Length: 371
Image (cartoon, rainbow, N blue to C red; front, side):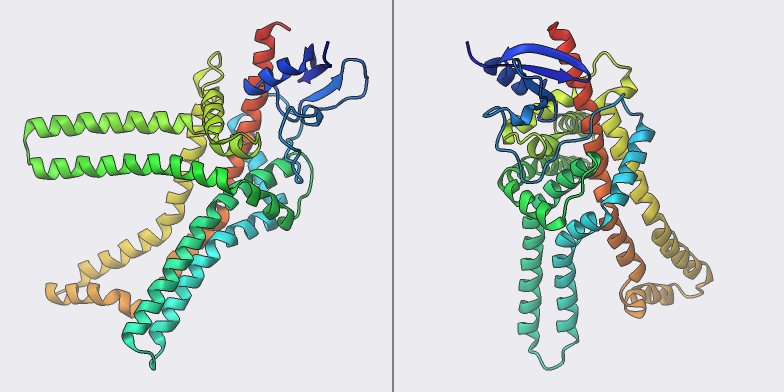
């Protein structure tokens, strides 16, 4: 008979289980790296990650979360998110700069070339365009590292550990192929849904006031909303599954769907996908609040000009001249930078939610198995 192990989940012990049973539990998501484990003949507890061959090689940056407690409310998730962001602010800021600086450098270089008087216009334009394109490509290439880095730093801080930015960067690079492929799949699917919305708008514009065109467009709109919601649920935890569980691309999507649809016995507002939707909605509301100030200021300025103008032609000329007169919009730029700096909060919140859902899912699976 092969070696057998005892597994502990939220204080309850399960087993003895042989290696094949452990692998089955791992595939089903009932056994994760952080679960305490011991050999059936040894009283020394380690973790499931230490069982040879059960998981991939242990990462140089440990990403095990702190031991799970009772299910967190949404308010507690937000509080934990802010605490993690505060404790790892330097690391999160460095990750943000990793993807923001290339774009910023492209914009600044373009502005410098425009102010140069001894450069040929054609060469100046070509140089600015080429450099801006290179910086855009670099930002896109670095995005998977940014995503993986947020998962690694959040998991380490949640477990009470400190991890250096360089160590995080070195570990995040290992996940680049997997996360990049998933980014193409997930973001590409959302882009296709946005294109569907554009098609609906074109149909409405081209069909005029035809009752049939309106009916078809409304039907497509309902289909788009339904598809968007289904896609959001199915990919809710793809980042965490790919990085924290070390699953491959297809397995990450399967695990994400499984976790997002778990908790069917819970009240609707405690189910994972509802809490995920509320977290995402809170982030969108926060972004709209940040934009409210600059938008309102611009609207008020235009409204005052409209009310005080005597000559409509002079008003049109003044509105056209406003961008050149005021130069770069520093408020808008500062708002965009602030959004980038705070963007890790969204990723952190989903990692915290993932740990909460993971603990519930593992415990319910074991209890349902009756071991």
